[in-house]
Length: 417
Ligand code: ADP
Image: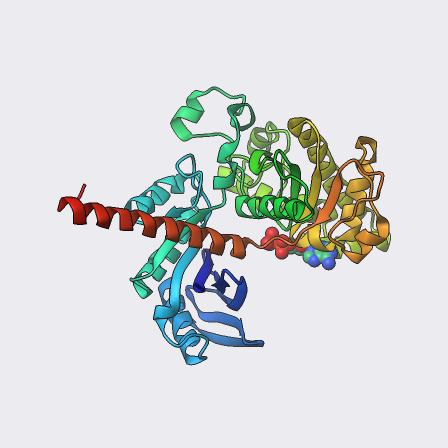
């Protein structure tokens, strides 16, 4: 039976949503509220082939959710709120508490809140989004889909940091990894592609390169995350749009002493003023940097080469972690759209037996390796909203089954457990 599921991503001043028909995967409506908390709010929604934009006072997330539901009714996208079957929420940090998506009840909400110390700018606002939907749609089940959950399969040799273990015990400092929803989507999509082609997906070794403004790489074996480049926070690993990625950690205390910088100033420097933006001194957007580089801008060229080097080095490292490779996948804004970055990365990996088919790469085909390549190379558009909707369906079905078992037990024994 077809179901209508929301996939929601609540940020500090924004709320992105898609309403999907499942299992057909059809996107019924999608859009975003921006500048929540101000009188200059913006609401954009696409539905029935139309795109509408509204400027409005947006005092809160709660107000935005109510406005969204009213707009869906008014535009006759839905006839009644009873048509909504579930709401899936992207939640930044599940710590070590959540290795899978989960049905949201009071206990789950309080754990997400407890984990806010690990993601102070995300978990509280994700909870605000959940609370807003719970209030507006009290009969509808909510599911939390964690950005970290997919990486809970990492073994200690990959998630431990070589610092005194008391900090893991006191503050749970370890590698968590992020972009889990995207990497899991890629893992499932590639496995399905293999099976469609009559090949076994068992023990499939995939390296998923999620290259967007934030970027991470994940080594996947048999559908499970083995290693990933982001760490305790999403700052770690690759060089990104405005994030440094890995740097010598002693630079931090050095700069704090030399420049009298606070911890917050260092955090802002590394998260917002570094990466491609800092090296190119131009932009955090690869499109701008490629254009400048082609016009002879040396800083732009340096930024691109540093970005590519990190990606290729990480892929090479993960080939060792996986003891080989079957599929290298490019996804997200840069991975899906920049033929140049893909080509530069693969050229550096020729020494490991990975080779590109240049015209397939230029055309953005699904498979872009040539016949000599030891592994397949793919471009797979990621779809985090679809993954959230699928997980929401799965968890709501499990929840329904367990409540039916409970009801059955009560009916037989006459008392609850
Ligand atoms: P986010 O991490 O914000 O979700 P996306 O996955 O949408 O980001 O990726 C956004 C980035 O993708 C942009 O900052 C830009 O660098 C890059 N990008 C998008 N389209 C292209 C393109 N045609 N060529 C090169 N880079 C692109």
